[in-house]
Image 1: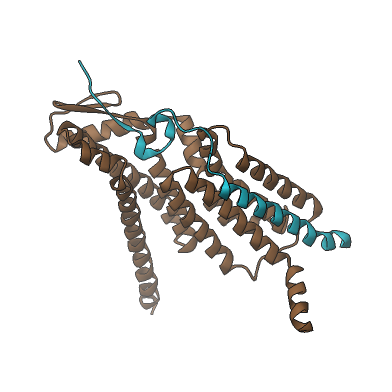
Image 2 (image 1 turned 90 degrees about the horizontal axis):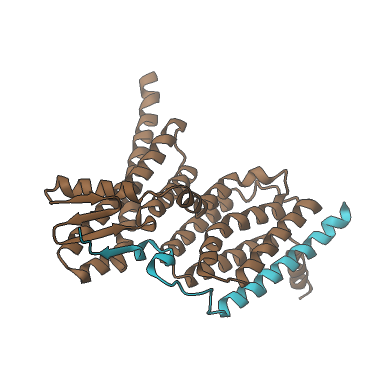
Amino acid sequence: MLWWQKFRISFLAIIFSSIFLTLVKVSLTTNLGEKPKSQEDSGRVVMLFEQESITN
Amino acid sequence: MKATSLIKVKSLQNSKLWLLGIGAATSAIILTLTWKSGDVAQAGMSILFLLAVASLLGEKQQKLNLESGLFPSLVGGLLLATLLWQSTTFKSNDSLEIFVRVSPFLGGLAISLLASGFQGFKQYWQELTILFFLGIPKLVLSSLFDLSPLTAKFSAFLLWYFGFDVSLQGVFINLPTGSVKVYAACSGIESICYLLGIAVICLFVFPMERKQIPIVSIVAIALAFIINGIRISLLAVMSANRNLQAFNYWHEGDGSLLFGIIQVIVFVCFYLFLLWQQERKNQNSPQVKK
């Protein structure tokens, strides 16, 4: 498996380049999915406690 | 001049440096996406957990076996490729939330396969456990059960204990002049998972006796639940007083994050106390023998 030891560095270099390019793409992208329709959909703890009035 | 270029070429042939680069770039992608998702708490926790992983890896870097075969490297590469593909194609906010919670663990899994293969995999069990607790327990637990009725019950009990005229209807806490509803995501399950993760980090970074591990875990869960219950009670009182500004501050504003900080500070104080007790016990034991 000596060929693999030689090839491994190139393999890691290719993976690193792909991740780096994806990082650039992700950093430049501003629109990430759809905005939540309501506070309940947002998934944030701080947003999900809603004040409600109740009529008994 | 020749010596400098030789050093540069030799550095590029060092797999350790490439793996470090892969780890750093993957972490940067995860942190960027977490920050952009608007989940400040998750972003803060991700930084803390990744720093803990870096610290643990830094301590044992000389002992690590960085030999990996073709098959584990391919599996690791494929896993990373899937993560990269996912990170650029989000269809909804829900899938983004799942990604920011699952990707740290899957990324860690992929990088450990690339670094040491299947045989050296167990070298990273501590780091992988920390990354697992960064997001997966919350996803699993919140899909399994809803803690909000119990949280509402506890908050209503606190209000009753402090003399408020309170009544409880499932997840609704009713006071004479106002009511609040405790949603699933406000039930404290997230705080419990975060504090459990911090407990895991503490146990790995500052090891403790085996018998103390269940105590540390139970205290972490109880502290997160109780402090969140106090927060819900305070919000119910603010709602009843029609103080919407204060309600929003403690619910959505910086005040809501303050409760998370309080949870961490109280837990760290408890852990420091246990460590101090253990140290004292260790110092005293040889003297007793003498």
